[in-house]
Image (cartoon, rainbow, N blue to C red; front, side, top):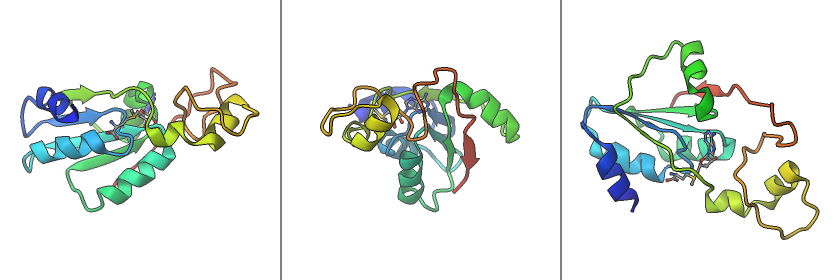
Length: 144
Ligand SMILES: C[S@@+](CC[C@H](N)C(=O)[O-])C[C@H]1O[C@@H](n2cnc3c(N)ncnc32)[C@H](O)[C@@H]1O
């Protein structure tokens, strides 16, 4: 399934693609494999754990730019870092990774869940406090 999604995403192997919810890099990896030396992927996620994982996974990958932040803030993040990308395709794999669902520490922090075993039904950034709906992190940017 991820392969089929990426197959439809790639319109040119030299394009620049946004993986707006890169998670642990599954789709990012497949996109990277489809690109030639001019192609680029911008991988973004709001979750610091996912960003850390992806940085390790793709160490020394010159075709990849990794951004921590919410995709709703992408324009501001790119502008404030003087980055100018024109995307050939954008992928947003919305939802949660199994790692995030299973992390009770985050659920308890975000929802103030008292039980030890309640599953997490909503994806959250490890820093995000959902009790303040207007609270949006600006996000920081980093490169490999
Ligand atoms: C289903 S996972 C993505 C899995 C990924 N495609 C992969 O192959 O590993 C969804 C991801 O979206 C991220 N996410 C959810 N809302 C976001 C937002 N507004 N901005 C950036 N990332 C977000 C979550 O942190 C989570 O890592």
